[in-house]
Length: 586
Image (tube, rainbow, N blue to C red):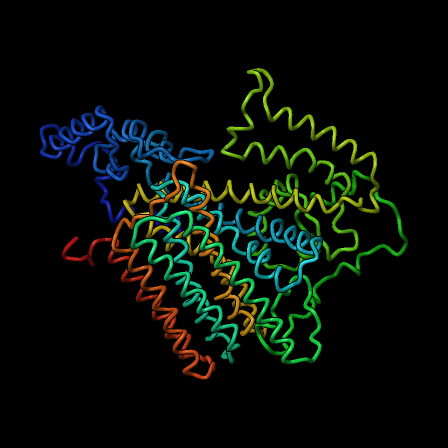
């Protein structure tokens, strides 16, 4: 509720109490404000009558009685995709005097969307990617910079792809990609140096910073020319493939030079030992109390008990040992996890039974395809009726039920079938559809908040969207540093965001190209875009010069400089957004 309250207060202070409603105040009969409102209404009617699209931001400049008609008739106020029409809800469903309440509810829903993205990526998307990489027999280095990077960056990449799908929200993607880069390379990297001073791994650091600077330079050039062609979009993806090849080659050379028979890392430790270039290892978690509760004598559980146990999102043994705030956050995540458990299968290669739950997996054969068809294009394909009679979702459900019966009758509860790996691909697809649906709602609600507060998509991307998508990486990296692995966490800061910018921009623009339109326009909408790109490039140059100058010995002074740099950047960005800082030519 804290962020929601802050948004509401900021809105009220910035726009004034008079803007909260259309009754009284300056809107009394015969006042100049009312006459001005009438002229604006006639101008709006003329513009809409001639088919001209007025910027959706203009809605707040009109009388509150005209808000609903404005958003319903203006093409610029139409949200692309998604299940909820947030603009129509805030300007048509809620009265003008309850606008702060609508903003508060939207802010709470925004925070919950971030929870949905985090839970889906952490507990469903990443494990299935790990199972797929294991099934494909990929080396841990390749898996680390491909599948694991995709799992960690899924919310950022999907948000960028969704934002690039509409020219009006492309600024969100640019702001989020650059904003997350500045945040991670300054706040997170500086926080690691403050928590645990350390010696950085030289070669991985230089490799990642150089690749990231090249990616930022390419994006800067794309923004300068205002477009991205098919060749340039493929160049982004090609650069990431070259980065993967470089990582694998550097790993092989490093191991050949050491020649001490490094033990291969575990499934969830790709390239960590190589990047840190020392003997750090995560070890095992001693907090697993599963052995204590295992029965002494083996017995066969019924399918109903297996289903009930698999659908329980709360571990009651952990529940009793955790503090109240952990329990509160857990309660918020229970509805999300329950729905995900019902629709997304998870294959865990670390378990003896590969997480085979026969009754639940058979249910997934029905629910996962149904989820995919109902979330694709916001249910457009799922609701389509074959020959105008039989809906597609019913056909998918019927076929899924037949397959589920066949699977249930030909398998057992104790041993997974030989084709169990197929469930990893099904879980990957289902979790990806969940993330895409949540990212679509996230982009739409951020655009709605931008219209309400009259903020640009770029500033929303570099603040709310970038912070929300980076908060998980922030806590995990700082926790890793606090536990004694700062080099590992520092390497993750620069290695992970390379995937986000190259694949996010490259794939996001590539998917928007058609046979008739092979160019995507990315015209900067304000000075803020250039400040954002320049700030990211300057932070990378600073680290590229400062870290080797300190002989890769990073301490609290380096961390303080990075944090002060981010605060200065944020102040300049906000002052630019509110037109305090602007170019004379603009």
